[in-house]
Length: 326
Image (cartoon, rainbow, N blue to C red; front, top):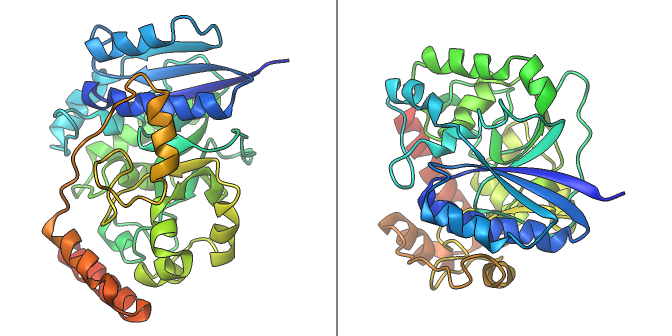
């Protein structure tokens, strides 16, 4: 029996090429699967979406379907939430994209997430409808998001969704109610909204399902020191180390090292990512990399001994977060 995968993406027209690279990684590492990609984007008539459809038209195991999630933009606009990409609310559409899908389960992936091994699904507890990996944001960030220190702050780069239960538990109603009553502007956009409105609906899953690039660049122990991860509900260091060799989804987060599709980047996943670019619908995709002044300073300070660098990085994070707390 052929295994079937349902993958959801949300992106605007500008980020469809990046989505194509993520899709290529899923297809490459799951060669014996039938895969249906549900893409919430601005219009099914845009040139990039048509190009993506055309690229896979002769592959009978690949289906691509358009999802309209823009109908929630009015609510997002009313709260003056930050737009991304080509001035759109696509980062929030992931919260809504599965509402009209007739599916049992689906994976939601950000466009900067690549699949590096065969996809397996986590088992969700009966009372949970979303599986998510805890984010490595600084321990103090819970104060900004107005989340109790005991709450998990989840990364939304890769989400495993029990679609039926997501609907039964009225998750979209809970999300909308939270947005309507939101008393601050979320710094991490959809992540804040998800973590707060659906805290009781989400199950913490193995970090192999969304392994962060920073762990490879800085090292796991250094990452724990830089973000005070041992002072928040999180994973043990050995859990992250174990996930490194069993990673399924790799989140290509940026920083001083840049993103793997940017020119002159230092991303630890650069070489593998290049393989997926070449087999995507945009085989020559590249963007420029111009680090901010803060990143340049951080890069310069890397000559310091790790314990000192970690403390400086941690302090800068705490001061920045403190400036945001109201």
